[in-house]
Image 1 (cartoon, chains in turn red, blue):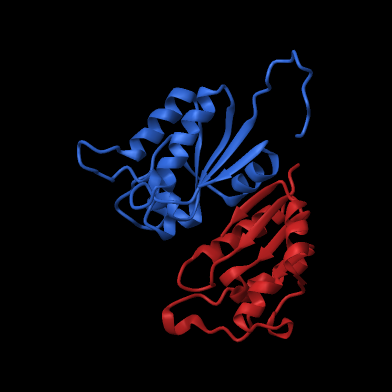
Image 2 (spheres, chains in turn green, red):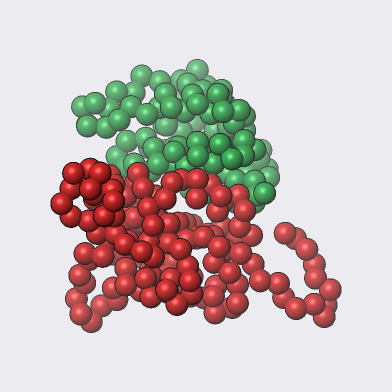
Length: 118
Length: 141
């Protein structure tokens, strides 16, 4: 079995990429919980609390990220540099996650031999 | 997978899984995926999975009608799949949201038209998960 990393690099609204990536993560976690979920660039916005996309006809799917914990997906990482660039702090993040500095981020990512980007 | 074969051993065929997330026209992603699929097969490797997700589901729409001197990528996928005996999996949720459906799902949704047929198949994300977990190489376009 491969170790699969899912990279979230896009904002939660404006495109469906994040939502469809989350669906892919949950489907894969049903077969193997040894997967990694990485948030960087605008992907760090996926995890913010207090989203309300109703005004743009969007779906509020951020709470669904809470299923990662329920499905025993424990390797959840957020890029510290991307957070700092955007003024996001750990208390803004709604799910259990490890914040990694660039070097540790690269080390964590190197532990996976398949990477899918959303 | 980092196995060093003995010097005289024949190169081993790899099982490639492709994830196609770009449409049949408008960006280059799906064209690249198709050309890569041909290259994989030309080098005697195996295409274990071809999965269409996100905007990639548009590759399955047989109602596309490009100009006569342009590539019809939908037909190119069909020809490749029929020649090679491939199954082309399309995420059912992503497809239905984007107006790509087969006869059965159209009937179920009360729609009078449908635009997806074999060798494209509406499948669940479990197929993508299996592809990502089991292929020797997973390449996303």
